[in-house]
View 1 (cartoon, rainbow, N blue to C red):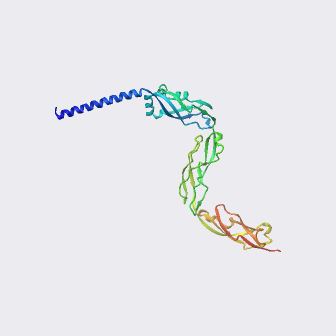
View 2: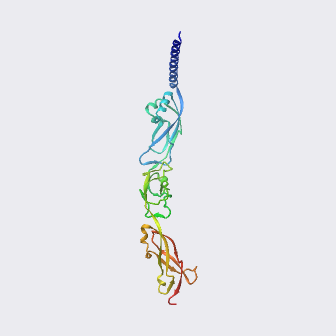
Length: 310
């Protein structure tokens, strides 16, 4: 026998051995998968509720079950992940035994081949309440601010400015507003418009009709303005008292768009007696100023007074 003949024979032998091994492996696999086994599996559970009802307490979203079935059945379940998801219809409150329900809700081709030995929990304590709605305002993100020497020139607009929540009356009662996610940007130097997400509910039994809102912010630069304003007296003192000085320097900050609107007659400074001062001094206070300015300071804080007709 030549070396070439020997190589061909060895090659044929290796092929025969490999074929025999594969046939044996397949036979062993068929035998094993045809046997019954106990297997623990976790079912994902969803619930179908009447439209006007809601859970007052969240039932479990997963169930741990011990099943008995042939290996082929477990193999098919591992290939199709959708088969380990069960939808349970809920009609009313009360105790709900799970084994017959799970057995009934399994796909028809699995229900006949699977025996449920145990399930945890064995039953559900269902508590249903009337579903109600509640409309609450959306609160602004606390980190939405302006850069130094800038301010909001108009009220911040949220659209929508409220959100409708759904759940039971007990769950919704303490909620008075709904927050947004943090703005996350740098302090603003210019106007901004963009979408911001609402925070997710920490309680999955509370749902909402919107998940985001549009925020519109008008921003402008501010500057300082100084203006002399007359100091006035009350009606009962106008004809009998004279004060010195009779005007004060008011310093305030104002947006550039409103700079020319800041005039002296937009302020009222009033001098009046104050028992904490000397007898010859009256206290000066600002009793009126525009709502679009921010006061820095004014001077003087006190004036001397003289009787005109002692």
